[in-house]
Image (cartoon, rainbow, N blue to C red; front, side, top):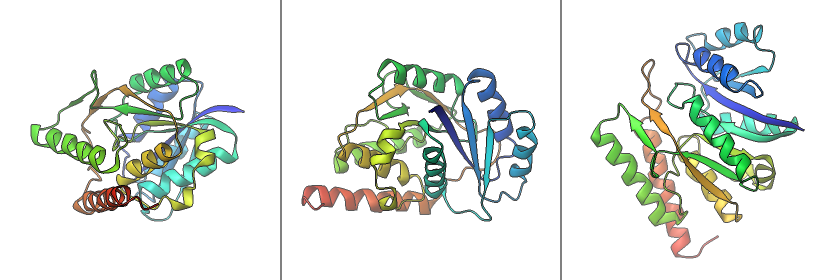
Length: 241
């Protein structure tokens, strides 16, 4: 069995992804990395191929067009499970997730080996954000409060995309039923783990706003999340499976 696979979706992250890859292999040298690139026009894929000559455990899956965050992770999970990884990690390519925090999350997973999902959380004691406006912070906190109220997950940062999943839990999930493509994918995955009685823990992290490139957040992504959370909440209150 191989230990862990770090999955990094990319789309136009030429200024960030290569630096992240170098940091990962420097600070966590015993991990493998899989980049899922959605045909980045800025040639992110070409940069990753060059790095493969330096880092033999760096893998690249290239798709012809932008297909979404959720499908990138579903593809990465399937690829990792087929190759026997015990832990599959989600990490953003834009340097908003710090490798030093990933080390903390891995350490906590080792201390609690029966954990099914580790979430790098901004909204528990010790967690924070850097270079966010007060308005953006309030919006994120409010969104997570709404998710907790509607879906009842008991998780403070269910929209977080910095995660460690156990392979055993991913094998139990019906990934074909996970339909979200935007950031609601994180909420839907948390909900699925919770419904199966999985053990979820949150570890405080510092989330840093990107310095280079363009955020992938959009009104469409926010709208998808709000609609789905509302539907899941209604099903919960009406006790519809």
